[in-house]
Image 1 (tube, rainbow, N blue to C red):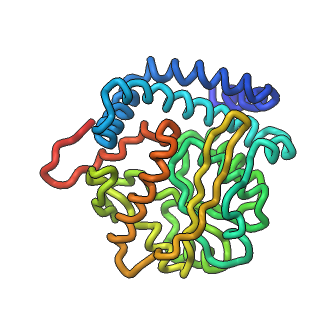
Image 2: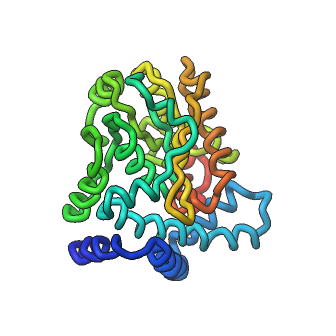
Length: 287
């Protein structure tokens, strides 16, 4: 089944983008109707993070989240199997692209928007630096090999596993390889601290602050937006007040700024993740 799925994605890469997005719209609505547990997770997250919205507003947003997730997943067909010229045409790098010039140690803060893989592809194809990231392996070996091959299609350094030590990652960072970091998920209680996310205590790994401090690196946000014509990969100016000597304060600030990015396109954030699965002692589960 995995090999058939990969073959389907290879064939899908040759279709017009409008057809792929239409198929993603159908698939997204299907997933919204069928995968009830994840629909519940998304609706719970929206209720916790946007209590000022009406129930009708939250219900209207939820299916759009599934549609964007489905569209972005099918877009991996042309990201990983399309012609390079076509990919470059559909991925637009905008904003403070000059922040990526040179060899200064740089941590890229990449929130979990649906376009996170498109952002990686754009950078590795269009910027002449060896980017690295932290990869979580898939239990399905066929799927794992396909994902790794797709993400290493263009210029990139080695992907670090979560079992790799901090020392190796920091050495790579100091050596000039920007680190593509996605720290805004619940990775469990180990090494996490509780900081507010939309006013709700969220277990958060303070890795952005730690890697920036240990790597003597600047932090540059990368925000990728799914558009009608492909993706806009927007590079924001480096944070001038980050990191500090207070990792808790840094992580609070990270979540505050993340909220601003999400507010600009809430339908493209990965709300199906159980962001509040880990709860402070004495607090009831929310899912």
